[in-house]
Image (tube, rainbow, N blue to C red; front, side, top):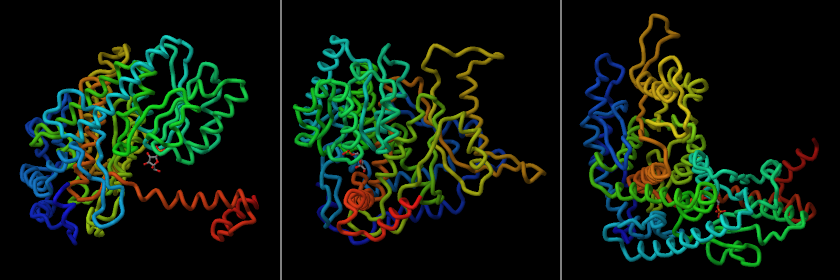
Length: 534
Ligand code: F6P
């Protein structure tokens, strides 16, 4: 257990670090990307780091050597590296000192820790053993399903972390989908979500995968009941079609209702669960087990990179520090994730939950109110489509939005025609580079409407090709970037108390719909009356 957990500290640490003061000074005059001659080829070549086949190009951030040195001092003072080691070793990181809390490890790295990790801790090894047993179970299950040759559709029911990561990864690997296999997704409690997902599906050929860590989530439990009833009314034995992913002992751990149950444990947070069975079953069914295994390899490689000292090799640490510079010192409130890769169309939605559920926090791990900004608002869409949508505001609006671009040298599918002397992939990357340079340098004009102020920071995460391996590495890159920021801010990145209030009030209002004559809830009742008067 960490020193910090043993000794309660009664003021937020972050703004008292020496490096914080230094960075505040430096932030008074951030590097001027828009000044003619400042953004040079030398600068673009200088600010490049590399891990696991990815380059992070950050010459277009408003940093210089002094800023990068001070940011690294901040990482040192906050013991970010030690905390990453402790997290991956299975120490308790999910706690608020002196208050009831989940009080447990965040060991999602153990779900992919099978590839010669140096000196794993006992806790990490035990967790990896449990995870490996599920993987072996999955491999056999997929082989049986392949042999049975009966199912062509997987209907996945789950929400939040039990939906966003798996779905984003399923879409990212569409080029590997097995012929005749696809998935439908149900996450919302909106009945139309269920109706659309079931529309046209031959239930005889459908497997239903219900994913819920707790097994009690209202949306998932409700949607499952509706889908199960459809199987029953079609005269099918639902238990032969339903499988689940959940914690041992949850309501979804019931052999009478599911032909197979795969496990996760309380040390895997929902939003950090894509490399557990939460993503594993879907990806193995649609892309094959080997693709999922490659994804785990890539994620594990980035886990190891996150343990390396120095921002030249540790991409997640570098990205975390750039994010803190933009958030806490240049005071930017939002962050856009813009992949120039159509395959990553739902990836920003996954990162949105990963980051905002982790860092939508206002107390530190000692229980003190923080006196600095924590997580930014995360949003995003793919380029180039988004250029024709919200990039106007990014270039000329009054709010500066830092951007994390993601792109690949090669496309995935065998279609990249040459039109007018260049391929589409070249045109795609040209657009990305143009945006990053244009946002940085801006453009003067005599016509005020055509002035681009510039100094809009961004960086590019650039890989060779989006494969299962590089996708796994990309996922772990974001997971660890976020963890590092939490460590530096001294906030708990692994709980989500902020979602509870809405759930409690929704249940109260649901009771009022069900039993209008019992215990009134005046505020909720007023809104129900407004509804009823339509
Ligand atoms: O409501 C938020 C949340 O708890 C997320 O953190 C989680 O990913 C999601 O709900 C789904 O939870 P479960 O997997 O237990 O159904």
